[in-house]
Every structure is written in C-alpha cells, then in structure tokens.
Length: 286
Image (cartoon, rainbow, N blue to C red; front, side):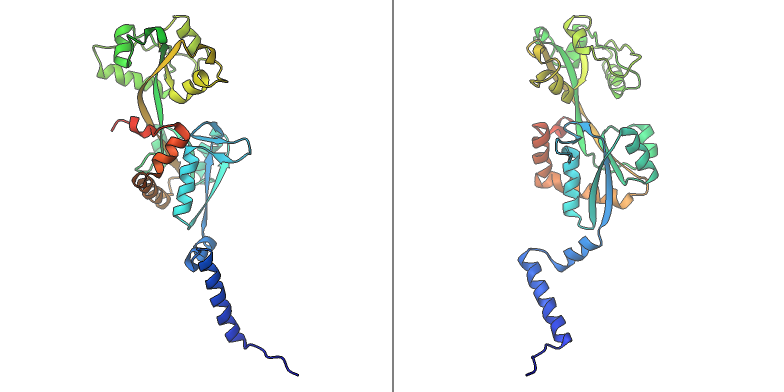
C-alpha cells in the first residue's frame, strides 16, 4: 500500500503559510525577521564606573542612563544590533577615532579638541549637573554663584585643564561685579576639597552633583558624616555627548531622530527619573 505524499512545491507553500502564521502569533513580521538577519553590529564603547551615566553593574552587565538610551536606539532601529563594550577611557577615545568602535559614551563634555577628532550629533545625550558645595551654616547667605561671589568667592582651586575652570572663567567674565577667586591647581582632583571647605580654608567647592550625592548624601559616602554640615546648590547642567567616529554620519543622524522621539514620547524623562531622580536636562541653559 502506497503512502500519500505531498508534492514538494505544495509542501513549500504550506511551510511558508505556517511560518507566517507563527510569526504573526509571536508579533514578528517577516520584514522584521529579515532586518534582524541583516542587522549591522554597532559597537558602543563605554567607561565602567561613571555612575549613573555609564557603568558595569554587579552582574557584569552594561548599565546607566546613556546605555539605556542606546538600548532604545537598538529597539527603534532593527537594522542596528547594539553591542556594548566596557573598556578604559583611553581605549574608548582611541578606538572611536580609529573605527574600532562606532561610538563611545562616557558622560563626555564638548570641547574644541574633541570636535576636531570626533563627529558630534545635533542632540546631546545626557547632562552633567554642576554646582557649589558649601557649609550649611552659610545657607542664609549663599543661594547661587552670584551670592557666593558676594559672600567671599573663596573657591577650592581648580586645575586649568578641567572644564570647571573654563566655566568659572566664563562666569567671571559675565559678572564683572561679582567675581569668584579662581586659583589654578596643579592637580586635576583634590581629595581634600570637602575637608578644606569644612576647615574654612575655602568657602566653596565647585562640584558635580553626582559626586556630591555619592560622597556626601549616600549613607556609605566618604563624607556622609558631614551631611548636616555641607549643602549644595545647582549652577547649571553641561550637556554630555556621544562621540561618533567621523565616518558614522548615518548612525549619528539616526541617533538624533531617536533622541527627538524619546523627548516627544516622554521616554527620555522616564529614563532620567530612573537614573538621576529627575530630568537633569531642565538645568541645561538654552
């Protein structure tokens, strides 16, 4: 007795219908499957300890606000397969220049030197809030940089190589009647800055908000015991940018579209609230 056999051509048609049916049940279109198969791998390098911007969590996974935004780019553009590469600061900078990585994220500020080496998009990625740490006993006198300048203007020295130095320089140019005493430091980071303020050697420390939260407000912070003696006031936020390889013009353009969409649909604010506790972009001066 012969078994009934389905002709090969008919079998192929049936198989296609079955595959299409499975794709619909799983919410995956045939075009999406093809896009995924043809996706270009985008290597996104990032530094590893700059919480909450970019870091590696306790499970070894890439995390942070800037990482989260790039995950959204991967979701909106199936032609890109985003691969995160935790690495050192030097490897990131050199790797993006040479094309080893398409883009690098590190909470990077814009500088003339960087704009010569990397492609910058139209939209910034995040924002780095900077302000003044001072003694709480002076909270009735110090409310912002202007009132700090009027009080004494005695600021912990800043390295001329630091972007903070340029910010205070610009402030002094814009406020000829309220000058901050800008003293150059021969080192980039001064671990004793909080102590010097508490000892009254200086009356203020120009500090990143994330550093103040980590060092003073956090229960395990190195200076948490002085949380009731130190206060902080925001000056403004400095945009942070992704650093693209110079040849990645299309990727940068697609990035800009995604960031615009995230602002429009509220996802940007949602992610900012998750990682910063607020949308820090509101402090960026237009």
